[in-house]
Amino acid sequence: MKYNITFMVDKDTIASNNIAPIFDSYEWWIDLAMKALECANEFEMRLWGNDFEGIQSGEKFGKKVPNNETMEIVFKGNLVPELKQEILTNYLTKEGYIKWFTLILKKGNKNIFFSAHYGDETYILVETKEQVNAIRKWAEDYPIIWRVDVFEVE
Image (cartoon, rainbow, N blue to C red; front, side):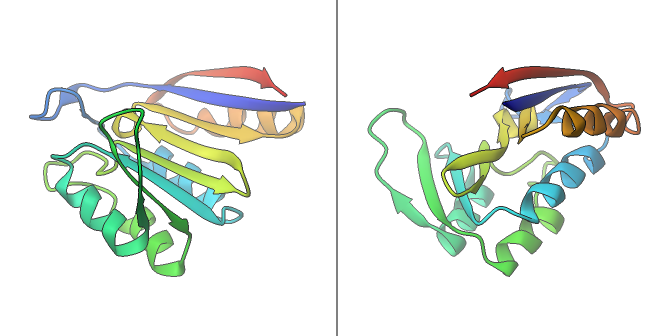
């Protein structure tokens, strides 16, 4: 059995685009991304046309792929050390929100880290109840996380 773990996070400020949250702290997001980057080998970025900083990142590290389902600009590729570094240190726009509308980190064909709506909808995939319990305990260290939800997946 596998588990998707989602995080409900406090947000007080919305960016000028009226949809991106600006969090008081991003430590929780960085910590989750860092754990996923240890074993992820591929990425996908989904961006809107005005996500200029995210698009630059996608063009630098990935290949633009056709997207006939949504109006998003989609980049995919293999994770390289330079992209891992960017995800951990250069992840915010000048305005202060996560620069990727959606950032997915994959291990093979599995999404192990999924950050959508500029981080407002973030979840990870784990494989055991022990990992679920460890993540719940981990979340207690981040007061910005006000709820952790767990869903069984096959």
